[in-house]
Length: 303
Ligand code: SAH
Image (cartoon, rainbow, N blue to C red; front, side, top):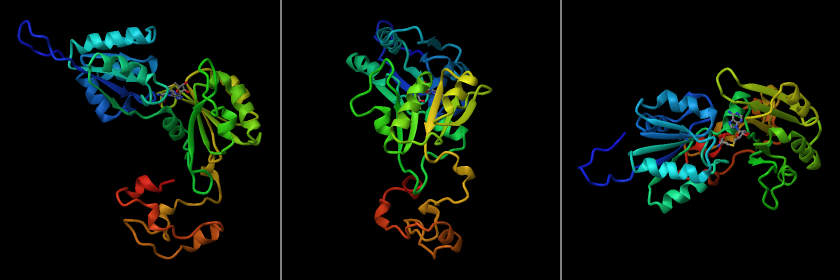
C-alpha cells in the first residue's frame, strides 16, 4: 500500500512487521498476521513453507520476495528500501519469529535506520508437532518443563547447553534443526540416562497439507525409522516422558480440573472416588498461592 504524499515531500517511513507465519498450514497464521499480509505493500518471506501464506493473502499489488538466497545485509537493505516506499512491510517467518529466526540480526539494522518494527507471534512448529501427534508436552507428576533446543551443528552450543546436559532433566525436549544429526541426538539421550526404550516422536512438515509425516519410535529405533521414511529435513524431534500418554491406563489429572482443587473461579468439592483410587501419589488441594490473582486458571495450571 503506497502512501499519497504531496509532490516533492518525503513519505514517512513505513513500519516493518515481523510476522510468524505458523508451521506450514496457511490457516495456522494468526488473524493479526493475515490482516497485515492483506494490507502489505511488500513481503519478504523465508522459504517454501511460508510462501503459500504470503501468496494466498497478499494483495496483487504487493511485492513478494523469497529471502532464501539473500544474505542478512541484503535482507535488511531490502526491508529499509521497502519501508521508504510503503506503509506496511512484512517479514514473514516460519513458526514463531523468536525461535531460531535471526530476528534480532534483522531488527538491529532497522533500529539503526530509524524504522519502527513490531513482532507478531506465530504457532511454532514445536506446538504444531505436538498437536499433530496428539501429545501433551507437560503432564502432572511426569514433567512440567519443556526445553526448546537443538544439537550442535555449524552453530556452536553455549556452555552448559549440550543436549546430554539438558536431557539430564528428563523433561520434554523439542529438538529443532537436528534431523540430520539424529545419531547425536540419540547418543546424547543415552548419555543422559534415558532408556533405549524411551519413546521419541519425529514430525516432518507438521501441519503442512498433504506432506506431514509422523514417525514414532524409541531412542534405540528412531534413527533407523527416520532413515527408512526418508526424513531428512523440516522435522521436529520430541523426546519426552509424556509421549504416548493418550493410551496410558492411569494418569494423574491436572489439578485445575480436579474437584478437590480450589482456584479463583471455583471452590473445591470433595475428591472424587475415581481420582482418589487412580492416583495414590496425588497431593490434595494446592493452596490459592499457586494461582496468582490476575491470571486465569487456564494459563496457570492446565497440563
Ligand atoms: N521459528 C520456527 C523454527 C525455525 S528453525 C518455529 O518456531 O517453528 C527451522 C526448524 O524448525 C526445522 O529444522 C525444524 O526442526 C523445525 N520446523 C519448522 N517447520 C516445521 C514443521 N512444519 N514441522 C516440523 N518441524 C518444523
